Length: 401
Image (cartoon, rainbow, N blue to C red; front, side, top):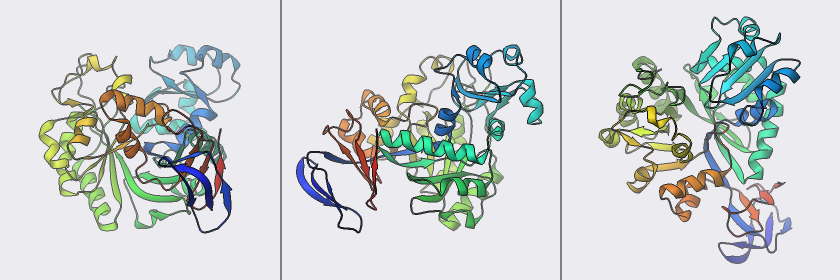
């Protein structure tokens, strides 16, 4: 594939991609590397589109109009249990952060659960109400939305409420590039490697704690409103087993860590096993930084602005959302949206990063690191426009919009 007459880095050139000599006349368009989102939930984006979004839709109206299982996500104030028990079909409502859910009695009995309010790993059971075909539709919907905003490569976390073989059957149909992080406590060597030309299972995903919104992020000091410190999910036996497996088999270990108490507990492992990754790192004690010099960070600058209302409940002496500090002090920082928790549009994340003090040049460098594909824009600034097409490294042209 040859891109003819395209502007690249300010100059009009012909660019060669892929193995063929097919010519695509892109005269007058501006080519930039596509964006790479270093942490999101690919199938979660599609499921939110496939089901219902409580940030946009009224729960009362949904309950009146639905005829079958109702799955929705996006609440911040927990819905009334009596309200969702007023209907005779399963209802499962997931908090915006994904770390808490409430289900009605019908869903509780169907899923064979004891409680109506679910936390952390138990939230995955909500999605057992969906089929593999639902997930395949969700994948196509998510890909379309990501291509529209110029993302051609995602680091995703999808092994929830399904088997490993089901996940493989779903993702091997992906057109977008996927670096999959498998949520598992029982990794096996043959679970990792190439699934297709664009999908690679390369990492393990662990959860050390929860979220600030659900008051389950593990903090050194108690939350001001609950008096609790949150929850630390992992133990030394699991951590050592997983990190040793990763080192032996060349598999990256990525850990969801939000609270300063959680990162303090984990820092010796990241020191002993370099080259792994922390996801989130919203509260970081300065004293643990020497242990994390060889650790990558997937961060979400927009969380600082989204979380302002709930930060009044957090008591900490640690650095808050220290993403710029980490970057300026030589740590490897990658940007991500954590969609569907937050919007997947890179411009939304980039705007927050620049408010934090990152320059536009730094944002583009960080957000396109590892990209192998080109996005074609009518406007030379990829942070001010959306692509008209994506040209994959192999030469496939994906029209977007």
